[in-house]
Image (cartoon, rainbow, N blue to C red; front, side, top):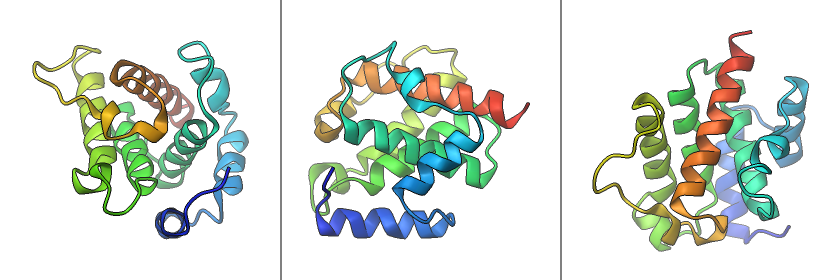
Length: 153
């Protein structure tokens, strides 16, 4: 997986903020907690792209490093990870789509997986994820709930 230099710079800035050395370190942080992101994603979207899986792993690692214990807040951490991967000056960056998705997923979790009326469809702004808005919500929710279980065990 090769990232544009300006995207990698953003990702590294966010990683440094949470003392995550690299994307490989993010995966190790998750594995150390017994969190297998792939096993959570595959039942929802078997053919997910490598980048999306990496982003979700990064988001879960952020939540772990922050000691986030509520799924609704984990979703926000995942949104921060998604935002870090948005290409500068893209629609996703301009509209803060990653963060927006994180807050939308947080609300979705708080409302017992009920969508808000007129909710924004972030999938068009987050094309690099290769997921529909429903898949984004379902995967973010599943990972967030699992992180909550692990952090409260």
